[in-house]
Image (tube, rainbow, N blue to C red):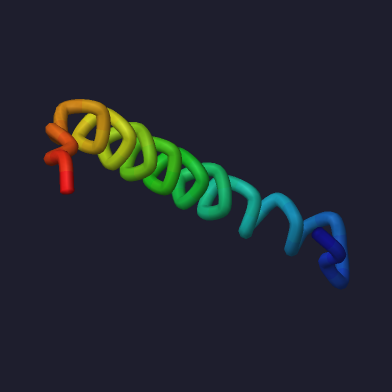
Length: 42
């Protein structure tokens, strides 16, 4: 990510990591839920 200064990068990096972790957890839960679904024959 291109920040205007090294200080800006240090400020925003932890927030980005937290957001990445939240996204990963949500995707993991979504995939787990999807694997539990039963597909009905049409």
